Image (tube, rainbow, N blue to C red; front, side, top):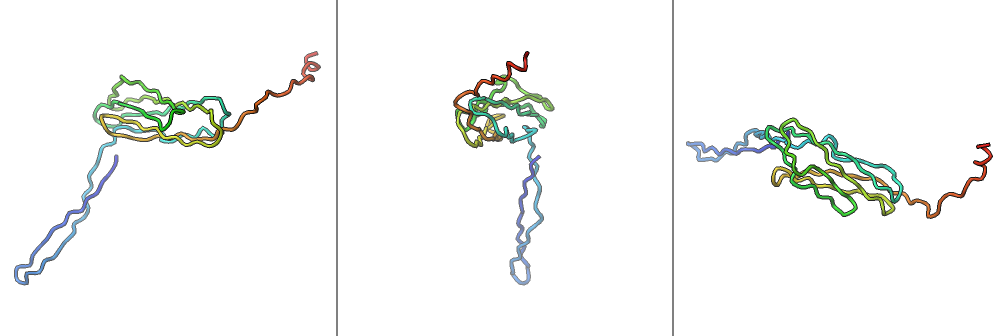
Length: 151
């Protein structure tokens, strides 16, 4: 649940002195219901080899009182591919997953954001990150001693 606060301002005028006194009341707390809950909003793949695609499943739960429909899941670049059930509408308390894949073609660190749009125009972000290490261009040399071990 997200809480917002607002302060109200009252103006009082003293009748015998015509002086204006401003009084600020205590902040009012307005609760905004959070419908889409992510078990984790960030996942670190750590070090992964170049050329080996990886995936992670983000668990999503409807913590609201109304139904939840994931309208779109958009990655910040083409190397990241989200998958989700586009037709499913979650009832309160139900869980689903968003599978996020990363194509590790480029060497170096990465930090990618994925934006979930749900129930019309509401949004929430997830992040994947890690580091791609360069794989050797050639394969390892053949180990001739292995033949001796088999005998």
